[in-house]
Length: 178
Image (cartoon, one colour):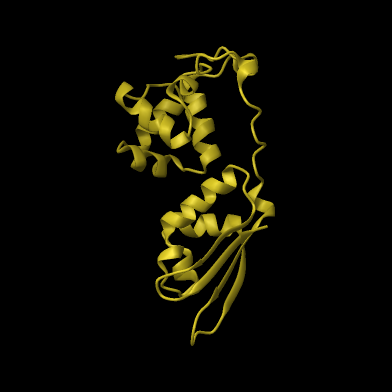
């Protein structure tokens, strides 16, 4: 069953299920992770992606929000704007070539200076292990939600020093993407 074909030239045969699959993979979600975020089963997501069924209409705004797109884009539209009016997109960042560098110093503490490949950090956070746990540092500035925000910045093409703070514990934390 082909549902909601896209009208864009390069995606003329792309179904809603294909778009959900493409956007889900681009965000790095497994079907299980994505299903949990939506409160549905992984089997439901699989059925959507294989065009055996469609998501409930009430889920479309939440799905679009998770993908950082509009419902129109999810359904194959162009947000009601001609294609040429769209701002040029930033090319996706290849995180396999980037490292997350963290420096933590504090009074009466041994300094920590580490560098991790971003792909490793992404895997650790998906497993529920935050940077704080990896470094054995209890800092509110290094929790999983902050790491999720860092990945959002990376997806937007941001690199360089992204955090330079002294937290409530007196730790000086510098995070850099390079």
